[in-house]
Image (tube, rainbow, N blue to C red; front, side, top):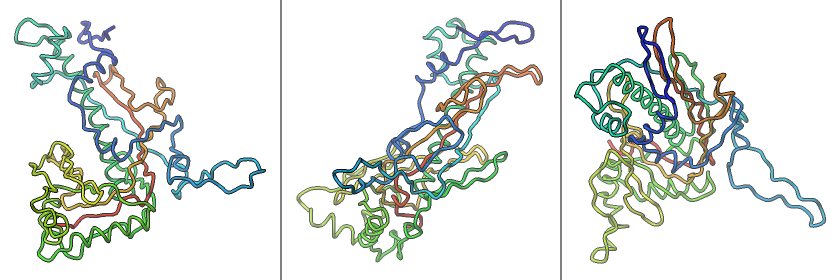
Length: 360
């Protein structure tokens, strides 16, 4: 069924949310690699706070009891100082107005699906509003997905979240990462005399000492990776001994649109991530990960939680997205809105050792 609204006294047929979702699923989606790789667990809470202490954190140790006694529950204490954390609340919106520029691929999809008319090259007023409705719906969803990824990366790299906006007071969620987990080399890896292997070994020791487990992945950028594999100490350890036998590194172009697996060294996966997003405030492309960052990751078991949606029609259900359309008479407008209340949290607060400043 379609939604009928009145525009200038005439009925206008727009799409319902399930129809918008079906069309949205056919379009290019935001790459969820960061969320799926480092925060694979999902949790939902009907309340407006996340009980962080009840989430999966360190692997528990079974309590000691005498065989004749009753079983004891595993201690449920969490590693965070704060037991309940208020998540971010996202509510992007967009007014449905006919645009002058259209996505040709989207128009073809809609025409082939019979959503908009096939005849003529000009869009009717109704079809133009349909396209605008779809574009605003997609923009809302993408903005929420981008915010979740930014939160995930901030939590991964710093061990904390700083939630703020023009109409949201600054709120800091600090999971209490040990300061020694922030690491910078004494000599830049892009400089002569850099001790790349020694630096990584020092980081590995910190990882084991503070997180209790060995790192599984190195996350960095193409710029740092290039400096690393060209370093004399690194070549002496991982390249020269294999000369004439095998090539430890497969040459690749540096891709900015996707994560790249660069190889495995002594059981450590090396990944580079050079993706960017558009900052609407400055109209410039911004990197998700700083260009000079390098980090060793042992915690790849974090959680993305969703709390209840504070909308009467949602009844505080913990939905990933709550999409709806609002038709207002004063001021006169048709607005697409999406709401989400997410929070990312680590499984091991000291599960990342690294920092910026590895190259100039």
